[in-house]
Length: 171
Length: 412
Image (cartoon, rainbow over all chains, first blue to last red; front, side, top):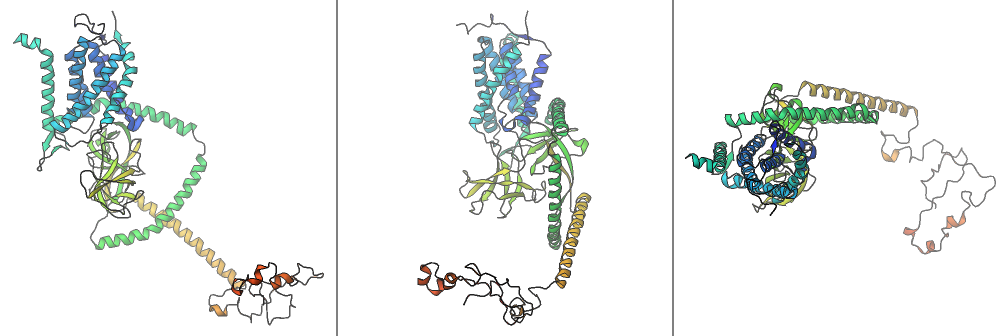
């Protein structure tokens, strides 16, 4: 039961305030720039990874919700699709990640990667749901592309999470 | 009331943010007359403001990253990796000369086509001016195939301008900001371009599928469509000028939704996932641009020089022919050609007579003369016997009544 804990005993991670701006901005810029380099194999979603990381670390559903919403809306704004589709998906992801972080000790790297994989799939499912059922738009999609993206997110998170862990403020 | 909000604060915040976004989505999507939902092609002012903020936030670092990358690449290409440049330059010059000749030879056909089009009151539109731009970033979303240019309305870009490369078309300008522009690529699902298959002249609509591949839809099943056929722009969509290369047919598959229709998968000529520099067609006119006209004039001059050189060469050949005895006179009928005329007074040179004849001496090979070199030859019918050519007998130079032309007389 070492993994499970109460909301009282789990520590909230703290970071320098500037990191809450720089890291999400860097994620948005790299997400827009890296597909120019790697081409059609851009199976990752850096804003989602950053949202999950901060939501799990801060363990605040409100902060996770707001960060997810901002990241998703900015991501939508860079596309030609309606603004709010990724916003809603990442809002839900941020909220769920923080809610899980409140109840589960997520310092274990494997747990964080598994959560990242699941939340990536959930985000894709929400996007497809919004397109098809909420808006009634015609969007063709392939489920294995979404699985590749979820795997890619986990691989990127495996590298990125330890790097971001080093940036936290310790007493 | 206070305890309710404090107790369910997280859920309230979540629902509030979700509700705002759902309402925002409802503003951006509308129903068409046939009951289908569609996103507005032109953003409302509030949505455009959000896009402007996002682009304003992301574009400067993207431009910096792109400039750094291009600087490193340029330093490598311009200062270090210059091997074989002279050879390439010479090859390109030769290629340019050949293309100029080809262009000049095609010019007459084009002019004739223009005259016919004028008769039909059809106005062909030419690419009058283009603007080179760099691709600096993308949408970062697999479902949204678009990229950003480093030039915007300050450089004269406007929505719906066609974007091309030397290889083929790329897309069209969707939205323009002050210093950047958004280009919707042809392989996006919401994109559409009128195209025509070059040899079969079948028309269709080019669009993208879920995997970002190009496909032509709305074509009835036709066995004439084969892989490798070129696909060109049809010019009917008022965005892409007619005749621009698009790609070639990769394969033909059945349309799963409509039985009688097929989907033609197209392999694009332009490298859509590796774009660096593109051309934006900023102006289309019914006449050629001054630069194109200058190129054509150069081609005609080159063609004129080439034609003059060929003419001089022919003239020199005629002069030489007048001074040399000809074997064939084009003015005479075939039966009176000097080559076949026995009355030709020109003596034919014969080999000198051997002082010590042996078996290699012409006329002394009895076996060959009798056709008995192999036993089979005697049993063969006359029609299958090999024709044995005997060399001409040595004759005195004064004998001009029956000249023997080597290789023209069969052994009797």
